[in-house]
Image (cartoon, rainbow, N blue to C red):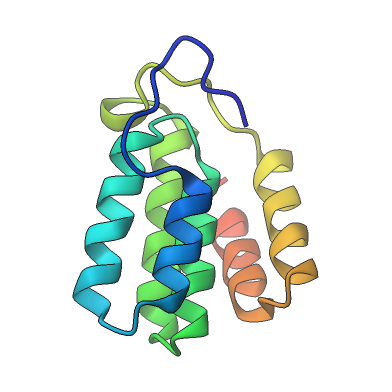
Length: 120
């Protein structure tokens, strides 16, 4: 996860994860996710971390799937937010699904695999 050449200010991915995991207010979690996305423009993993947080808070699977789908789309053909970032391969996303499962987030892992199959 390298952002060489792009300054990171604001909320790091790790800070986002630890704060959002403890935040029971969904609107505050969404705000943290927005801050984290803007602070970590080339960090595609932030979408997986956000999905894991939402899984932890028993968010509807459709919302989690939409979040993951957006992340895959942003980094599939970088434009807009990901315009200055390298394209993220299917293998990288699959590895994120494996890592999510290892962290105990089976729902996120399964939804990410579904999104990968559909989008890539």
